[in-house]
Length: 129
Image 1 (cartoon, rainbow, N blue to C red):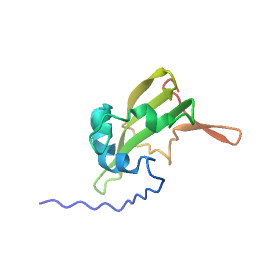
Image 2: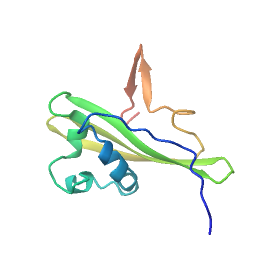
Image 3: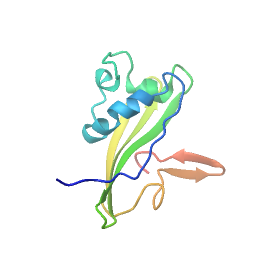
Image 4: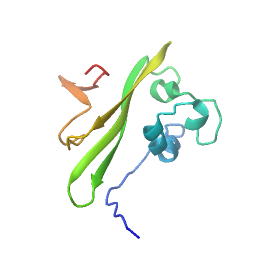
């Protein structure tokens, strides 16, 4: 039997309804298969909240772009692979959705960012970027 060590840590803090349950229960399956159906995204199985809700809230934002990704490291070799999903929500328009794979060993947050710096702001890259 092979044992794996997972030295990473994840801390999720936020108000009720901010997406903590979604993240913990659906994050990995969603990245692996891209299924965004509301019943799949709600940890209680309802169809009340679409992905747009998590991006735009209840009228707080008109537009939002975000990324989810998983990084894999092969044993002690130091070889990294990353899979991810980018999404853009705009009020009144269908969400755009794209996937990506990094096979060259670059790591998000180390060698590659998912945003560009414009002055003092960090703006998420679009699908085209």
